[in-house]
Amino acid sequence: MDYLLILDVKKSVVVIIQIKWLRFFPGYDIYVNVALITTTIKPFNTNGGIIMKKYECMACGYIYDEELGDPDNGVAPGTKWEDVPEDWVCPLCGVGKDEFEEVK
Image 1 (cartoon, rainbow, N blue to C red):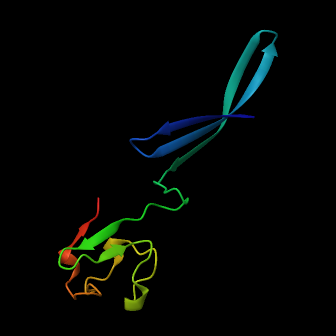
Image 2: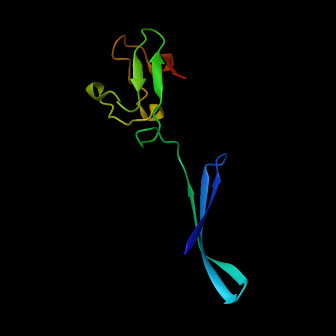
Image 3: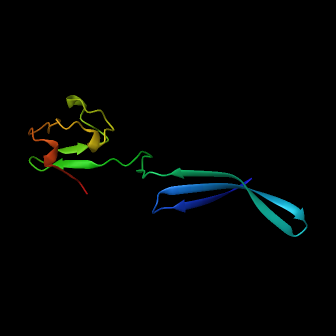
């Protein structure tokens, strides 16, 4: 079996087609699509994990890192910013989530 990989980066889609080469007559080769696998891809960092974003408090400079979370204040490591509770406040200065901006 051979595999043909089609990658569409703009749509984040991977299509893997499993093909089998058949020889009917000398000099006549054809292939048959025997399986089709489609999946989406997510961006990964160099450590092999999904890229986590960071957000900075505009009042004091505290950085919320999605990879680290804020376990001391009930936010588990790996918690995406949109999943941080709305009543969560900056652990250094006490301002709300609306005072944070994504670090580019």
